[in-house]
Amino acid sequence: MILGVSEWLSGKLDVKAKYIRIIFVLSVLFAGVGIGIYLILWIVKLLSK
Image (cartoon, rainbow, N blue to C red; front, top):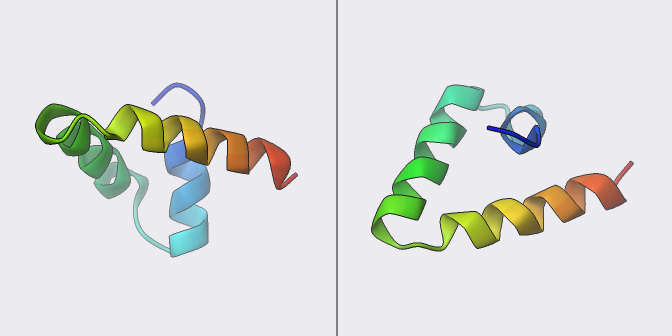
């Protein structure tokens, strides 16, 4: 997506980034929590450097 969270998370979980992106999009469409989770993971990514 925009902030590099999917690529970063794919490296941590050893999963392809496209699957993580699909999960984020589905969580936004169905549950609405994907945006919040994405922002939280972005903050964790920034703080882990």
